[in-house]
Image (tube, rainbow, N blue to C red; front, top):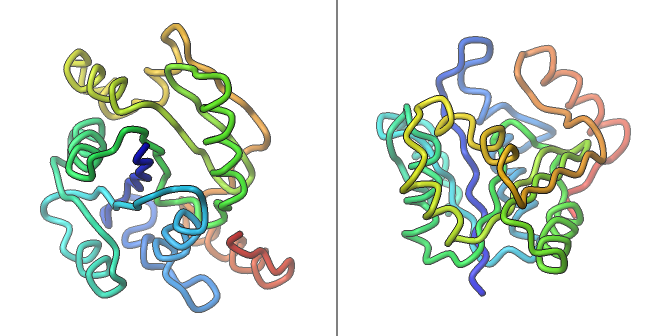
Length: 196
């Protein structure tokens, strides 16, 4: 079993451009997410970004992070091709705006997926959202989902299909604005949140 985490991120954002490289207690946000995934049961971590996104690609290259660049308008396609290039048999999707994601939560999602065997698993924790599916299911979606909105909001689309399970264990703390970033920095400083 080759479990690959695909972290979706890009530098373009209307509310907070370049948030992927925002410093959180000495590390760029994207690096924190990658480090957490690497500490879990994941076999390989890949960042999926867009073709024109040189800042994300440069950060990945500088930090020895595998990356894949695809179409800006097709998140499903980016996830699929990044997973395919990595020879994934199981895919874990992580979001690039969730720097508090923890390895222990990723491992919980992987163990639950292995035990229950849903077609798609969404786990929402305070640290972030985690989605798990087989590569076979991802390939099926790549070949059958044509609506651009469904391809962009894959987790919402997939959760409406039979066999999908959603576990709500907390509302994820994400960074969407500079104010969110300050709140996360303060949380990390005060509570010594570690990437386990």
